[in-house]
Length: 220
Image (cartoon, rainbow, N blue to C red; front, side):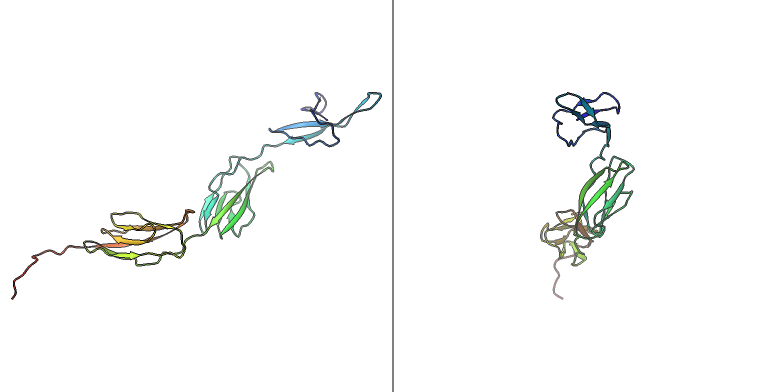
């Protein structure tokens, strides 16, 4: 087998390509012409087949963006090769905008996302849709200050951790979900899973004022 960048000249032998079938490879975009040369024995005469051109196209770049999304949320995938279209293998799990690349997590599972460049070459990635924690249960208001009270919050999905948006208003046990009032305010309590999916609730904390006045009185 021989190859050339021209259909009519410049053909050179391909090292090791002496079988009847040759499968060419190329690492960069180009159009290459191939032909088969047969040498007859004992005359030594040669015969060349007609040249066949193969055009190697550049594949699109790797798909960028987060490949994990929470059910009911979105994430945007990108590709530096512009002008292509997006398709999901399972829109019932992860739907995707054909031109925007915005993935919507529909149900828990995985879906294969394919980006097809204008050349027809493709890039593929797998998106995982993770479950979203349900609503947080528990009292929505507690007292703070000198008469501070507590409330225990719960979530039906185990394995997450609790945080408070402002510990000057309320603190919360990372694993227990016990909220303790500190001062007047409305802190946001978040329950987050290791996947990054989370649920929130707003607590109302009312500080109990200290009692003032004499601490003793005469009988009568």
